[in-house]
Length: 243
Image (cartoon, one colour):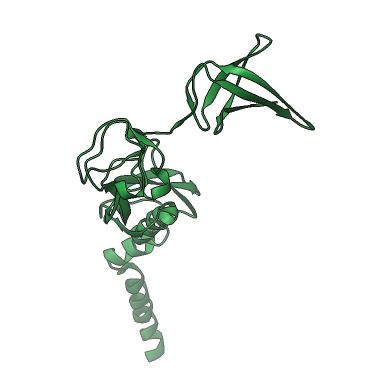
């Protein structure tokens, strides 16, 4: 008799336990089925690793910092991320670096970063005149952050020695490639040696230069037979014509 009396009570307790699941537990159970979000830490690492690789060919010391990702940003977890620089961007200084997800869902964001490069570069050791041909005594080596300097700075003496200035410089002025001119090796009106060469043959003849050209620049000449040819100027009054 006692056993029969307890069965409905136990049944009622079991039913009550099934429907008394707290509301937050129901939300938590549903949340386990949602797609996980992309880790912001991993986003920063992908961007930083990419910038480190880009800066690996830069001489000197490199320091990279990537700004924190906006905490409100929720992106689907990515299995294949690619970092990139927007077209026309230089790989140092303050910049934006893109991170693109390729799979399983596609998305793309930009992170702010800074790449600081500290290295040796060269300035004018004294006042230099327009047209002056530079030698080692005209150069002075300094060390500093080059990521904030204009493009084309001189970072080795070989880039400047033997070239002439296109403007005058005060002592300590920054030396740049765009203010240097290579020496002329072929002058207009000069008698030149025209060397025509190709697979299995080489023919040399004389002619007259039609332009002033530095080593490696395109030069034109007229052969003794009156033919106009175009080639590459070389030291010693030579124009190479390659076929």
